[in-house]
Every structure is written in structure tokens, then in C-alpha cells.
Image (cartoon, rainbow, N blue to C red; front, side, top):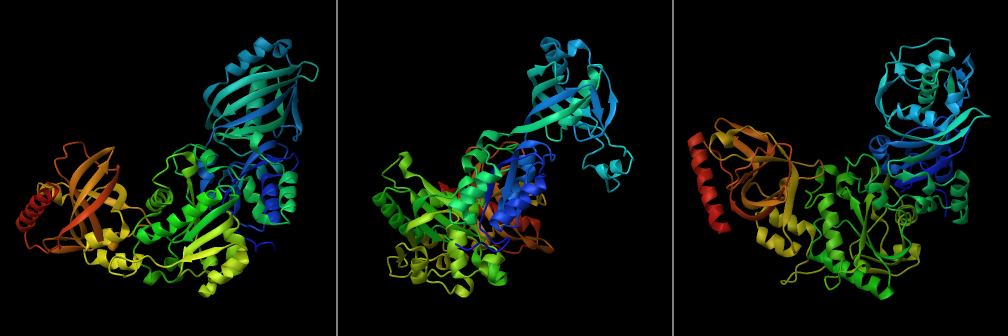
Length: 573
């Protein structure tokens, strides 16, 4: 396989690298770019050139994890040398002060007691030779010119400082540190020396852990290069070494959900279902059922590959249709539909991977898509697609070409049909929803649709009229206009509870004005709890009640809302 164009691979994941001494973190990134051809590579926390150990490297969409993973606690094995302080606080600097360490420094009990005094939250003065900026100037640049910048102390925390070994002859300690983000271990070494009544600097440093990502699972650059070489030079082979999604889910601070576009390590041989799958309707489920049956026949896993965003939103955004489901909902539905309802064991698992449909992918050739995008994730033994599936720039690729490029069977299933013989498609479902024909649309889908988001403040008009509403702000990739504007019966899912609700979707019409922005407002029937601002809520849209109207007075609006609530209660009863 030929090497990918720079920046154009489908690699997406987290690689743990054992950084060698003498190479900067940027040097490691540059080496990986040369090996893979991928330009979008970053890391989650730099290491000084002479430091070794765990460097968390991020490929493609995984670079969005940088801030989360960088915030994780770090663990280091550090060697502190006593008797000399240097300009850089490590062995690379010039000596600026020397002293004879007191003998008790090398008594294990005294040493551990001194380390214990450094545990906890504290303010640390950063080294002058650091990348911190003051008025736009790097501190290390000023230090090289003989000037010291006024670096403000930084809040850090030392969670653990455990003495591993003492060498009285070499006058060193070896210490296991676990510290917060932003802690300079060489500054700790400097301050420990001063607290001991002498001077000290950092002799050696090796990062052993970042969050729950461990050095024991890292790979050297030589190992990575050999792995790619053993795969006939394919840069995609590096995906075999990426962290498992289950590992990444618990990495970092845990405050940010793992992006769905961060791929798992490359799956081995598997049966594959490929498509957009917006809505995951009955036709999609029929395709997934066929793929699942073949996977069970082969005794292999089923891998579902879907695209996001919708290709139409990239190729022709002004004509792109409204989404039936957001990405999280789509993945949940794909996993559910891909499972055999008769089985509940672990062999029933379905892997869902998201292909980032970028502008560059829209322009890629069919050959590039097959070799770089699809094969970076899985080796298909049988591929299932819809009969209208085309791929590559200008939709030049078809099922016959895909079969040749993959050297495996490709089954193109005909579109599923409804009872009247008409094809089941996302386009037809959108048309039904736009005409408020929910029952017919849900019959084709095989399930209801949800609107999920965060409750935000509205104009307060509903509360003033005696019908307070929860205003739902959807995610950036969700368009509510797959539904017709109007009043609906719904159920609200909030904090593990389910409430009956009346739902308004449309432009809020107040006496004398009509808002330009679409609103989604839910009146939770009989809800008496606290305010809901900032909470996550999901609304299951059940049935259509009435079209919205423009009212000339607040009294008319209040009377109409009362009538709608009465009708909704009647339907729900």
C-alpha cells in the first residue's frame, strides 16, 4: 500500500510513546509524521528533551482530547542530585551554587519526612528556563540572554512523594512523584534541596503515568517503525497500537466525553456494514440483520461504519436535509439494531466506528477511500451496503469496484419496502415528519425520535401565563426542523424520571412580535421540582396536536395553551 498524502490519513486515536532521552516532544511528533504521512498529530503534555517516558500522542480528531488528557495527574520517577544548583534546575544547566549536603539528608527516615512536607497544595516558582511567557516573551529565551523574567508562582499539588532509593555515594535520591498538571519536577528538586539545607537539581526524569495511561503500555519509536515496516510500510498499521476506547473513556479528568470520531485500534477481520444510517430506520435494520447473520455464520464480530456529518452537509450544505438523529442517538440505535434480540451474551457485541466526512474525504478517490479510510479501521471479510451506495469523489465508486478493491464479497441489499411496496428511506421519513404525519413516519422508522439537549432560560412568558416551560437547546449538529412546527404530546426524561409533557416546536409568536429563532419548549405536566436551568433533558416526541398560531393578546395565548394542555392530558390518559 502506498504512503498516504500528508494530513490525509484516516488515523484517529491515542498512541502511547516511550520518549527517548535527547529528543524533544516535538521531535517525536515530527518522526511520527514522517512515518505515517499524517499532519494532524499533537500530544497531551510535553517532556523536556532529556526526560524520558510516557508521551501521550494524539492523531487526527483525537487532538480534541489534548486539554482533557493534559489535565490528568502525572506520575514520575525522578533522580534528585544533592550538592549543586543549576541555572535550569536540572543537569543540563550551569552550576550556580554548591554546598555539602548534611549527613541526615541520606537517612531514609529523614528523607521521607522531608518529602512528606512537600505533599499537598502549594505555590511553586517555575524555572527560568521554561516555556512560560511574560508579555509575549518566552522565559527560556530571556534566560539565555542573561535576563530573568518575573514568573508568577503557580498553584500545584503533590499527591504522592515516595522515596524509592538513596545512594549516599552518588548523593542522590530516587523518588516516585504523583503531581497535578503544571508541576515542574525540576523545580521540586530545587526546592527540596533548599529545604534540606543544601542545593539540589534534577538528575534524571522518567514519566511513568498520565491519568490511567501507563508507560508499561507505551511503544518505542523503533517498535513503531518496525510495526509499520512489518505491515509492508502501511502507515495505517500504527492504528493497531492505539489505546482501546475503554481505556480512553476513563483517561484524563473524565469531564469531557470521548469524541466518537476517536477510533478504536484497528479491528482484525470482521463483517462490516457501511452507510450513513441517519435515523436507523427499518431498512437500515434489515441491512444490519443480514450483516449480523453473516458475522455469526463466520464466527466474527460485526463492525458498523457510519459517516458524520451527513455527506450532504459537506458537499452541498445549503441543500442538506435535517438530521433525524444526532450522532449519540444514531450510535445507540446502531448498536441496538445490530444485536440479535435472541441473544444476550458478550458475543452479541457490535462495534460502531464514526468516519469523519471532511471536505478532503469528499474529494478523495474511491481507491483512497477504500485503502486509507476503510482499511484503517477494519479488514472486511464481507461488506454489506445499500444498493444505492456510491463512494469517492463524484460518487464514482460502486459496489463492483469496492469488491475488487477489498478482495472480499460485497453484498448490496435492495431498499426495504413498506407494506404498500414503497421504499423505506430517510428522505421519505423526513417528508412525513415535515407534514406532521408522525404515526406513518414512526412506522417506517420502527421507533420514536428524541430531542436531547440542555435546558436554558427563555423569555419567561410561559411562567407568566401559568404554564412554565423548559426551553431546550440542542447540540450544534441537531436540527429540530425534521419536525413540523406545532404542538406535540411528548415525554420528558430528566434526572432518571419521566414526565408527561406538552411540546412546542417553532417560532414563538408573542403579541406584537414573532421570534426569528426556532424554539423547543416543553411544559412538564404536574412538575413541582426546582428550576431546570443547565440540566440535560431528552424529549420523546409522541404525537401531533395542533399547528401554531399567531395571537393578538396574552389572554388569547393563555386560553390556547390551556386548550392544548387539556387535549394533551386527554391523549395521555
